[in-house]
Length: 118
Image (cartoon, rainbow, N blue to C red; front, side, top):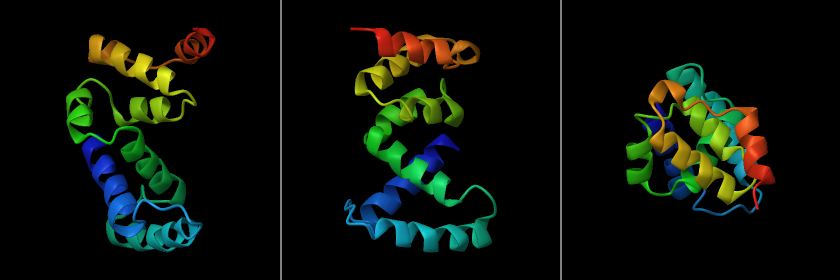
């Protein structure tokens, strides 16, 4: 699921939006969402599509995603990409890489610790 979401976000960003944010992305995503939902079912609402796009932008290298996805679920990546600081994402990504899969859960305490870090 994680790799599929990365590919969907990447495809929308590169092939449809052409990596531009000139304001027309809202119209395209709003049109694309019901089309994908009708064809494939749930999981393609506008916020999910934007999250997939943000995911592919935050992790532009598919090899990184492929390496981390056995240890971090889509829910983990959702937590990481929601963080405002690139350093925080890096910290949590490295934490997830070292942790056992069942112990790699990103908590609010982790986020607070990163934000407070120098």
